[in-house]
Amino acid sequence: MISVPLRVTVTFFSTPWIKKSDDIDDKNYVRDTANRSMKIVPRTNAGTDDEGNAEYLFKLERLDIKPTFKANQ
Image 1 (tube, rainbow, N blue to C red):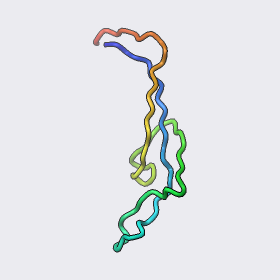
Image 2 (cartoon, rainbow, N blue to C red; image 1 turned 90 degrees about the vertical axis):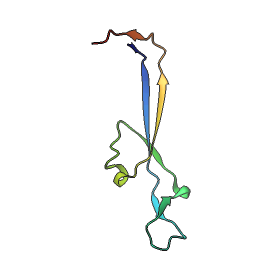
Image 3 (cartoon, helix red, strand yellow; image 1 turned 90 degrees about the horizontal axis):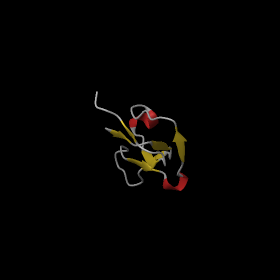
Image 4 (spheres, rainbow, N blue to C red; image 1 turned 45 degrees about the vertical axis):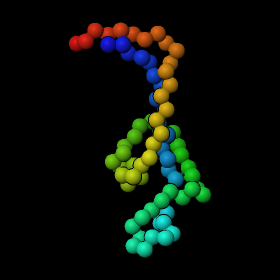
């Protein structure tokens, strides 16, 4: 197995939710595009972040380090 060194950056979209203007039953929400916000976080908790409605962007960067070989165990 070859292990390729990566750097992972996790961005959490913390833009607030607002009620959709044409929603009759008040059950549909959308992100407030006028107040977009995001922050880099050390880890995710998709079950509780943003009340279970979290959105993330994962950025993977391959590091300029020689990959290592590991025998299957």
